[in-house]
Image (cartoon, rainbow over all chains, first blue to last red; front, side, top):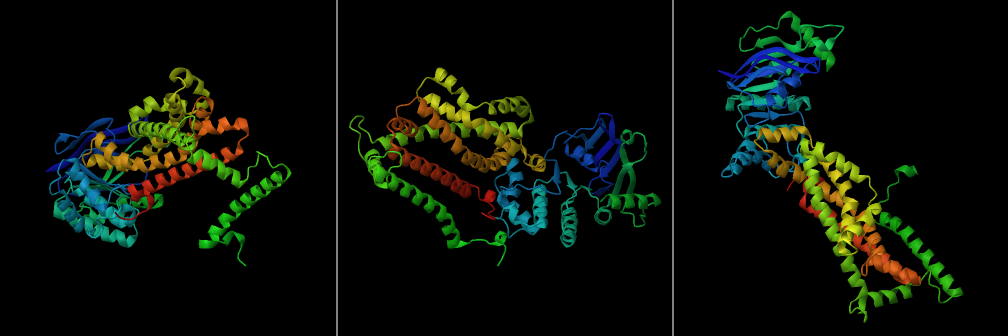
Length: 249
Length: 273
């Protein structure tokens, strides 16, 4: 079943084209990693799904319905930073989503349960400033998952973390993805992370390049690897993309 | 011997270092006062401590038979109620306008330029207009304080609210929050400690505007009294009044700071509730 689909989506700012002819189908329950060199439109893609901006042309469907071009509770998100509310305790941060949807009875118990699941059961009364970077991202995940979004968007969620902490977070997100049957769209510039976590890796890049007017061509999905096939091998061109990404980061 | 740059006074040393200039200034004053009184026992310019204590006793603890009130108490109550009304009105307006301008782009586009323009008008320049429009009574004094400090505070708070990371606002919306919920539960709590901070900075200017207004048209108030007794060169009244005003200002600052620490521990680096 298709959770999210892009039909010939274009994004243009004035006469510069950011994304062009982007068509994608994201199956429910899949974990899609999006990679690409920086400045190529990965964030734009995420902003489109979040509803922070609307496509210039084309359609985006979520569960078959046209996407509401405004952030809403059907799409959860975890950003690299600033995802949690500094003025609320850990518990209140998670209860916020339940309170917004009018659920007060049992909200506390449900939030505590979720926090215990991500390993923050002992920090319920702490403010986010007391948490390490990894714990703040655990909180951000718990906060996003408590409202049971239809798709979870991750924007470089582990980019600011130490390597060891990042590995722990990889384990956690994989477990949560299985337990909750989540559909995840993750933007990352770490190719190894993309292949390790995803069931599918999509690379975004410019297919055409005009040296006189580089802004006239936008990016689109240039590679699409389903990793659930055991013999998925990156094609030759991928090495070149990986090299460019390594140079950019 | 460490470099001067690296010498850090602590504890009692720090306290002592802070006291030295204050004590020196006081000694200098009393030495000069004693010298002047040695030449002219009825000198009014540098009153002795005794003269000032006498005046505080008369002004602060005895009923004036003419008005039936204790002058210093009546002045303090009048000034504080004007200050409270002006500052309170300014804080309430700032909270509403600052939140709306900082959070809602449509309001920012509509009101931002107006507030920016109002903020550059020197408030004392509009005092005559206030006297003409509101008369010489309480209203014009309260409005002067309000006009004097509100535009600055609104701009400050709006800038603070606008600087809340967009990620937070998006996150709140993905959790199902409406504009109203974002304003009340995300922006407002983060705006309040900043409002108190901004109030602390505005108390000084608020006193300036209050005393200016009282100096020009009033019949009671701390500013009124200082400018009244100036005619008689009554430094023995003026100096205790100035000290009293300073003490009130310090007390207000302390009260605001501890309110903020008590109500918003997260904004002051406290790690848990």
